[in-house]
Length: 384
Ligand SMILES: *[C@@H]1O[C@H](CO)[C@@H](O)[C@H](O)[C@H]1NC(C)=O
Ligand SMILES: *[C@@H]1O[C@H](CO)[C@@H](O)[C@H](O)[C@H]1NC(C)=O
Ligand SMILES: *[C@@H]1O[C@H](CO)[C@@H](O)[C@H](O)[C@H]1NC(C)=O
Image 1 (cartoon, protein in one colour):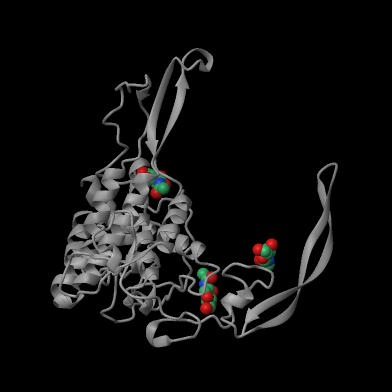
Image 2 (image 1 turned 180 degrees about the horizontal axis):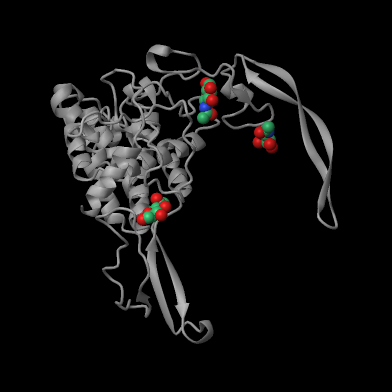
C-alpha cells in the first residue's frame, strides 16, 4: 500500500459518527467547525479546541464509499480535490478554523462579532447571504487560513505531495548569502487554496443559481484572492549564520510565512477600506460604484463588497443577525466596545460581580507557594 492510501485509510478510520442537519446551504467553511478527529491537524497552529457539541464528519458505511461524498456542501470540483488528496481535507478544515478564530479575534469588540452557528453548515450562518463587507472579510480570512495551514503542513512534511521549497537551496544570492533551510512553499499552498476554495464559486455561479449571482461569485473570488495575496505580501526572510564561532562568513536564508495575526490585522484594515462595487448581476467584471472612480481598476489587494452592511444592533434571525443585547460592553472605552456604540444607544445593565482569586503569593524555601485569597468586586456592563 502506498503512503497516500495509508494516510487516507487512517483518515477514514478516525472519522466519527454522523450528526448532520440536512440542508443544501452547506459550504466548505463548515469543515472549520466540524470535528475531524485527531488526524494530521498541525498542532503548532494556534487553533481553538473543537468542542464536543460541534458537528462531526460522517463515517463511510460501505467499503466503496468515499469520505469525500459525505462531506456536506462540497462543490463538484471540491469533491474531486478531496478524492485526489483526502489527506488535505483535515488540513483545509484546520485552515478554516484558523480563519474563524482570527475573525473572532478581530471582531470581538464589534456589533457583529463573527458569530459561529454550529448548527448551520456554512458555519457563519445566513449572514453570508448578504454581500456585505463582513462577508468579504470572512471569505478573505478563511481563504488565507487554508493557504496558511496547507503551507505549514507541507513544511512539517505531513502532506505526501509537498514539502519545503528547497528549489533554490545552494544558490548564492547577489547579496552574498546562500539559500538553505526550509522555505515555506507558499506557491503550493496557494495552488491548493485556489483549487479547493475557489471551486465553491464555480458551482454557485454556473450551475446552481445561474447568471443572477455572477457578480456575487466574482466578489467572493476576488476576496478569496485578497486573502491569499495577503500571505504573499508578508513573507519574510530568516537567516542563520555559520562559520567560525558565528562569524557569519556563511549565511543561509529561507523564506517564512507571516504569523497569522499579522495577516488578520492587515485584512481587517482592508475590510475597513473595502470598496463598494456595482451590482450588475449578469456581469463578471467588477466595477466601482463610486462614479468618480469608475475608471480606476480594482486592485488585487482591495477588498470588495456589493451591499451596505445590515444593522447588527437588533436581532434578525432571518438574516442571521444576533443583535447586541446581552453583550458585555466597556463603559470607559471610546472604541467599538463602548457601551454607547455596542448597545446602539439602548443603554446597559450594571451588575456587580465578585471575583475570587489567589493573590500575594510568596515562595517559601523550599518548595512551597503560599497565597492569600483576595476578593474584588467589579462592575459588569451588558447591553440592554
Ligand atoms: C506529522 O506527522 C508525524 C508522523 O509522520 C506525526 O508524528 C506528527 O504528529 C505530525 N505533525 C502534525 C503537526 O500533524
Ligand atoms: C458574540 O456575541 C454573541 C451575542 O450576540 C455571544 O453569544 C457570543 O458569545 C459572542 N461570540 C464571541 C466569539 O465573542
Ligand atoms: C475598558 O476600556 C478602557 C479604555 O480603553 C481600558 O483601559 C479597560 O481595560 C477596559 N476595561 C475592560 C474591562 O476591558
